[in-house]
Image: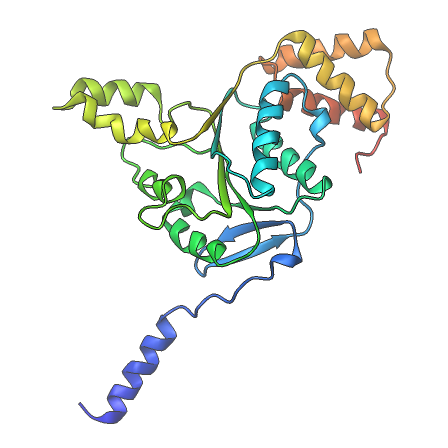
Length: 280
């Protein structure tokens, strides 16, 4: 093989190999989203979130998560957190609201969102964050695994960190509708059909045990549902007769077949639109 052929092969391999990722400018924003192919951290100039005081009915979870996040932002020990439970009850909203509250107190903290399908790349992301002097809240929304899903193995790099350990400047928060991150029927099916039932699901179920904080979110009562809407009306200056507001809100949740923070917000958006109020 002549030198010209070798040179062409070398050039082709160089084009195929991804270029090393340049160190991101973490001063560009308070939030980032991790993308792969190619690896990059995209700054988020405006993070979509609501004020912490608008999250009604989850006071205990709010206070616990806020204090844990403050500790971390101050350079003190803090736990990874799993926020699990009912849909639409503010699990992801509280993470973003707590981040905003910590920033408002003058504590340095960046939030980085990681998609579940990008978990296999998490080791590369952690190495990137490890090299920075910033402190990072790594956030994965709607985390869950099916019976044949191997992404959970990548999650251990965040929770345990392998021989390197989790970077001291990274804490991991995840939300899930499932306490054990996989459907109960899959847990029971694997236990009943496996040769060694206890080992069949232990590895996946034990993932949730690796979170130092478990914060449960449960369906709200009607009074809490109405209080959420009252809070939104006060915050955005929407003035509606109380009896009319109550009747319309109850009818709205009845047509949805559920009460939650998300349903309360959806009703309020509809109400604000009918009242000609903008939500800037």
